[in-house]
Image 1 (tube, helix red, strand yellow):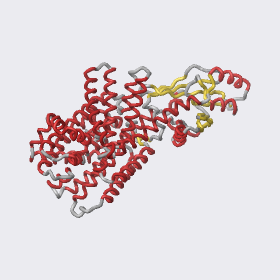
Image 2 (cartoon, one colour):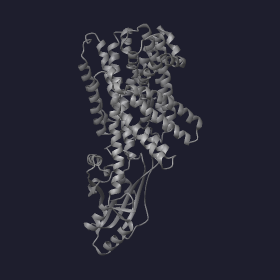
Image 3 (cartoon, one colour):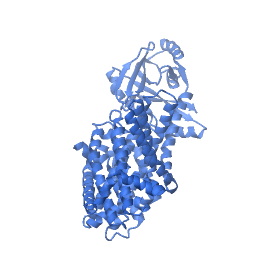
Image 4 (spheres, one colour):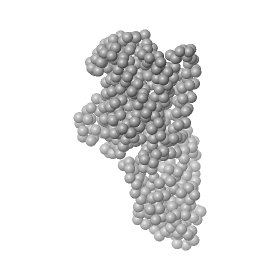
Length: 597
């Protein structure tokens, strides 16, 4: 039960607050006739069933690796089944696009969630004339407070927010049931026939409506991305109850629309109609719930970027670990404040949630489609034809929604693409830059290095003790080592080349000596799963190593090409890789090498 409450607080805020704006936005486009209402409700019910229940909480979560979810994890699972070649390159590009789209969605979700709730204040007596600017400023202030709270850690956030979301879902269920009682005809919408009939009867307009119906499922991708914070079981268990509550509530909103077709802000007018005395408490509850909705996406963003760092597709931002129980509960300061700046900017650009809805959905459905494609191929290569066929069907549904959302591009949807393009460009420049940098680095062949070292070691005075030299590949000795030993004459009695190797599996750490290289040089290797936090000092102490100094290389990059100039800037502003391996800081010596790209 404790896990379910935490799941409600951490991952269900986004999808749980979608009733605030989904039907309101849909019926900006449609007349609230009985056939339209039943058709839209049917589409909502079956969209949540197919895209959230089947795609994410069942199929995608079953493909997680040691409890971690997200597009990057699916990429790793698929690459392990493929041979190197064009297919792996296509999978990698698809993953980059999916991750970037989800990051773009991470900006829009907090903005639309908070603004839509604050806009409900206009129904409070005395606040009818509150200006749009005031509403926007209140929403921006709430966003600042929320992002300022992130450094406390997702575990504490979930513990604080879980009970609030329990109250929120209970309130949604009660409101929905009361409203359904007045117009039980809406229960027919559970039949998918009404959704199919709506699309058939409305043609192009019905297709456009799909771009707003998808708002009911936004947050489904966050359930998968947030797996690492809580695990699959509490999320799946919680979704069972949340799904029932959301279905009841959406049906209730439909019943209210049947009786009050003039309603513009459906949820808040519905609550105001049934109980004016409870309206203000409900409004405050909805604002808290939208803050929690933003939290779900922020936590998912931290998870995704952490996975991108550990798989070396993004720069190594500083990561703080906020829980002793689950190492995947993290806080990334630079990402947190960059995301806040982007959210505030989007609020200033759009100013109203109804306008923002025009940009919302494109990134979500794009990421859902890529998730569906990756799932289909994973299940195909794992020889599970029935599940692969189901995943293919789900991908078709994803594509339908994605194509409908493409129509939003001229009306503000281009902002989704702009927001997603920024991380995509960073990922491309960083991954290509790393490969280019390795090619232009000056390396000494192993045999030549050993010949020079043996000659110098035998006739020079050695420094007493042990020194560690970080190295990627023993076959090619980086110039910082030859510079330190041969140019500066820094040779210790015992020199250990230390390499850190990321394995293809996510977990497990081992440290061991390899064969001795020469008299005075040994080789030690740390192998770690790509999701592991490496505390190198503990590993080398267990191996009996007590070094006096640790040397590592740094690159001073100069470039004329604008792309490599950006790469050089990225390398300068992000922390050096050495800070991620928990070496004793007072023993570290960085040796700078000039590199021209």
